[in-house]
Image (cartoon, rainbow, N blue to C red; front, side):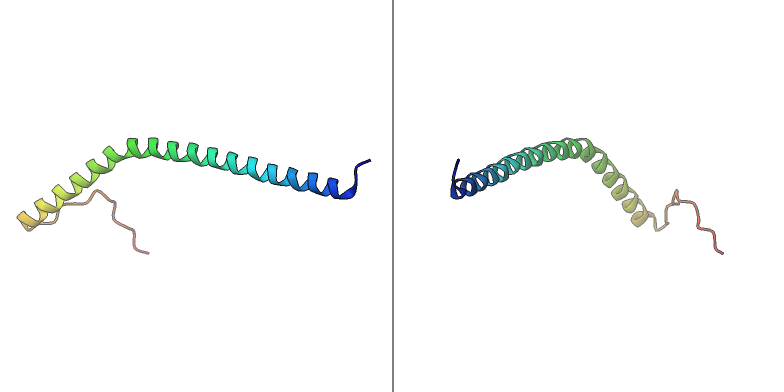
Amino acid sequence: MSCPCHKAKWRQLKTIGAIFLLDIIADGLQLKIDLFLTKIKHKIAPIAAEILLRRGSAQKIEAHSGKKLPKKNKPKKQT
């Protein structure tokens, strides 16, 4: 039979090992999440740039012509 102090040490080592393993898993998941977000960012960046360019062009046209460009949004119904 092993003494209680050895059982306590073994339990403590298992706990430390489990915490270490969870830390490694969390780091791996964080890396996967970071890579996924990077992929999304690379796909969305050109679209966002195009939207910003179009918005900037529309604002320049408004500034030079003095007229407001029509918005594509539907008017809100007043109740």
